[in-house]
Amino acid sequence: MSSQPSTIAELVARFGADGLSIDRLAIVSLGANLPSRFGPPRETVTQAAVQLSSLTAWPIVLSPIMETEPVDCPPDSPPFCNAVAVLDPGETIAPAQFLQSLQAIETAFGRVRSGRINEARVLDLDLISFGSHRCQTGALTLPHPRAAQRDFVLQPLAVIWPEFRLPDS
Image (cartoon, rainbow, N blue to C red; front, side):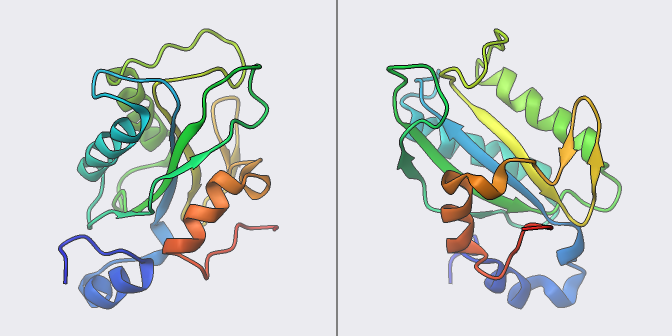
């Protein structure tokens, strides 16, 4: 058995009795369609998952990386490499604080926010859900308001956590 579980069921089977709580797992969508200092988008997503591993109390569960066509992006946008990661930020981390950590990783990878919606980017980390938390602020809405309409989130998530259902979907 590898050190990194490939599904949530495997994670729970290995660590559930040791204090892992499904109720506080965070789901993060990873996407890239421009090269970064780490290389092409696929390598960027792989390296971003390594960085996410530093934010979790238990091993990260990462979906396979899938190449997807851009959705609602400017014309001629290159294809994306997408994946989904599920991790446990721990008992003391709030969703807004976790989002700041995700944005710090994006910045470290070279993400620059120009204000254009759905533009090509070196890395995009979206917080899809954070346990059972619900919130709607200017900076964060949980669960993510468009996740249920995005196959590039749902398909990789179904590989690693087929039982998961977004609230209200």
